[in-house]
Every structure is written in C-alpha cells, then in structure tokens.
Amino acid sequence: MIRQPIYLQRKEDNVELQVKDPYTGALLLLEAKPEKWHGEQGFRIRHPNGSNFWISGRSGAWQAEDGHPVDRDLLVNIGIALEQHPFKEQITSRYK
Image (cartoon, rainbow, N blue to C red; front, side, top):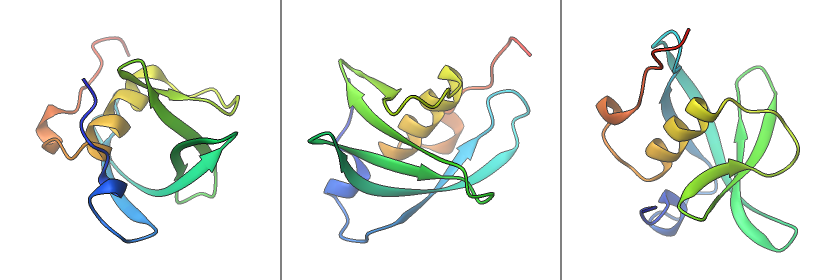
C-alpha cells in the first residue's frame, strides 16, 4: 500500500530525497517536485547531473510513466523515500 506522498504533507515545491543506490548502497540526493503529467499527479525526479523522469504511484507501485527507462529497484527506493519510510527500509539488490 502506498502511503500519503510527501507533497501532500508539506507545502514546499521541491523536496530533497535521500535514496539508496540499490546496487552500490551509495547515497543519492535526488530532487522531487510535484507535477501533473497527462492529468495525473506525480513527481518529477531530478538527479544532480540534470537527468530527470516523471513517476506516479499507481496500482500500489511507483512507476516511471514518461518513457524513461528507470531501474525498478531504484523506483522502489524512491517510493520508499517519497512515502517517508526510514532510509534503512530501502533495498539493496542482491543482483549486481
């Protein structure tokens, strides 16, 4: 079940997310900005290098919806961060 996303609890336009790289365990600092895309509410996720993609929580899972290929384990960790679960709950993949 998806918890109430962070943008519904805070009024800031941009939120910094601490996300664990699912393959290396390294800390990634990503920016999440609430955004509507094709009429659906979600988040524009921005990496410090400038790359970005849009995600939404549908059917109990976070999904990249704008055609950008995003690793499913990374999406899980972004969702965990957006839902404000503890960092330790983010996964490290056993497949490297």
